[in-house]
Image (spheres, one colour):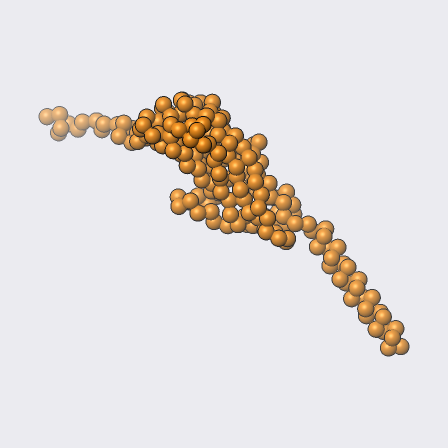
Length: 196
């Protein structure tokens, strides 16, 4: 009787462990993907003092039912001075929903089957002070986006690559002329007292 009871308990514990294992396997792990093919075109957000700042939004999606955490994300632009030396290039990556100015990426939870967007910011500071010339001589710029995620499994580092073409930089610069703050301020109409 004791042996049969022990055998039944072992069988039940084994079935319980098997059930939990099957549940975990069916749940899967997080699968966060950056959708570089769906990014927006570059947009010029400022151009002053020999510096032009461009941005593009890049959607990301958690393709699994499991929540995942993006622990860190950063870009690496690949534009050596032998290929392009007219400007100093800087890039940064931040979340659309959590913008920061300090270059720090704040970890974020991406819920299962939901998404967000990265904002890629690229700054060109002309070495001769003339940003229009720097943009005119721009070369195609590959950018590698690195992001570290964790879900149910181990922490993993992923890399996606996109190319910002020289033509796209020139089109964004030409299509959106940015007016400096001084030129933007319109003179106020004179009052009757000032005219007198």
